[in-house]
Image (cartoon, rainbow, N blue to C red):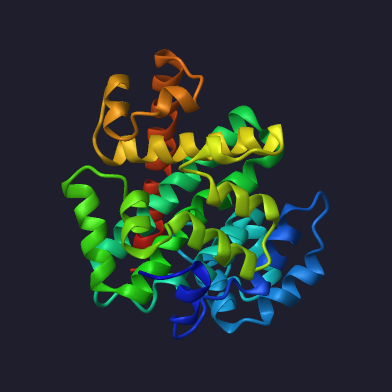
Length: 291
């Protein structure tokens, strides 16, 4: 048994770093009036990001008549949202880079779930908390980051516990606490603190499985429950569930945590399916453009 999240971070060969570069790009792109010269300087400081942005801007998907050879031109073609998403996606790849070879299927599943949840939470934000839809999007991307940390440090041992939770339909958080003395929400929260990300984002990750444990601040509490809902909808879709009463297969406590009708839940699930499908189709087109 591991004593604390600090111990698991000490066992990491290298702490996955959420680069200040990506964080600054997110801030600039989200500002009311974006500081384009500063954004260009930031992108130009990273060769990998520069190449990726130019490659996508020149892809057949965008089909621009002239070759884009400048970062400024690429920003115009791609738009702020795409630039921001590319910066964050590239920085998050450091979380899974070291484990892909040995745990390809599991890490790919975790990555897909993180993206699905992020897309769903952005949609929920636009529906219920428009001022914070970006915060909710990033909480979706990072909500299970603790699982990737466990997998990097514990490898096969964690993969077995993960599979055990699936086969026995048991809470993964409970199994993690039982075997390791902590769960992935605690580890993920410590990671965001070490990345110096906003405190509220730490709360959204720490309590997304246990919203009722958060005791301070109604607005934060509401967003924690949105993250819980987004994660629930993501699992509902990924598990091929179709009916509202099947939610108890995922979490028997959902009615104590959420105030949502069957009709409203069905509407949100349908909206979420469309969001995920639309993103999947765009991704496919981009992949075809690169090939």
